[in-house]
Image (cartoon, rainbow, N blue to C red):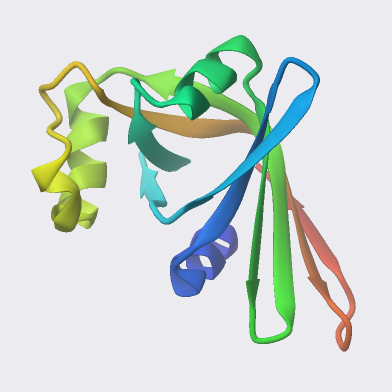
Length: 130
């Protein structure tokens, strides 16, 4: 899991895929955090992506950097605890203009049943689960 975190953090931007009915939806994200030995992302509850995850928590992330890429799939689980939200926002203080751990919009979600495939055209692939 730490290797996945480091890869996503170093990429800066990754792409999160969800579904809306039978339509795939993909958008850029940038938040990633480890809290209590779980890999978290963050978003606003008012966004369509949040509603899509509520309807179907299975997601996939794709990130690319320096000829290597990562595909991370799993289920996202909401964590409503203020401590988890605060930890994320402390890691990304620039988001505090839009989000606060005590508001009704901020949400953090962690991966469950995660599978990460590290890929490259020049190196053998690697899979990790957590």
